[in-house]
Length: 207
View 1 (cartoon, rainbow, N blue to C red):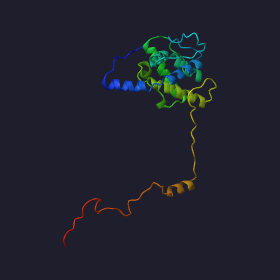
View 2: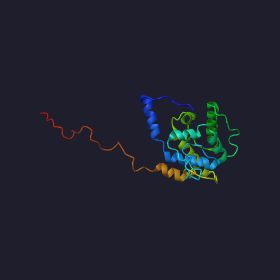
View 3: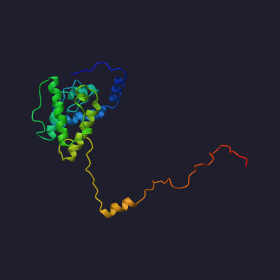
View 4: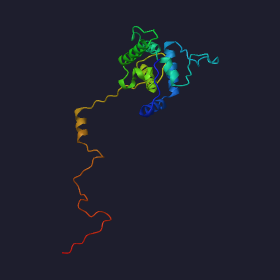
């Protein structure tokens, strides 16, 4: 995996802000959802708890989150689970080029699935751990969209609402254009122009 060197100045400030937006609870929910849909488990170092008999994860930080997803394999399997055939071939080679390609394939498949552009992330957000909170948000948005599309498997996120487009006839539209809003004002009435300002002394000019 590509690791960045220490950040300084503005770069460090932006990095800290990005890290502050990362929600570990939402990240764990996202990983557990990926595992449930793909019927696989992540081999994380902290998943060896003998008291844990299910496939749920318990990542400790955002770096473990990135490590679980950075090869893109689980992401490709996820979108194929939601929409079979979205990605024809998932790269299994553990090389940076192939791993990045998997992430790119996942993002393109999500867009084709119907996910909005502002809900997606960039490849480097995950692979170089720049904005991992955006990866978490993307997975939750994808889960909400899957519910809207009628996916019957494990769910996550808030179901995307349907558009409530309203149609008005021409008569109603004309009435609306003729109405004056309560917030509308007028600058044609009386004003205080040329009046003595409050608190100012009056100047008496002899006649």
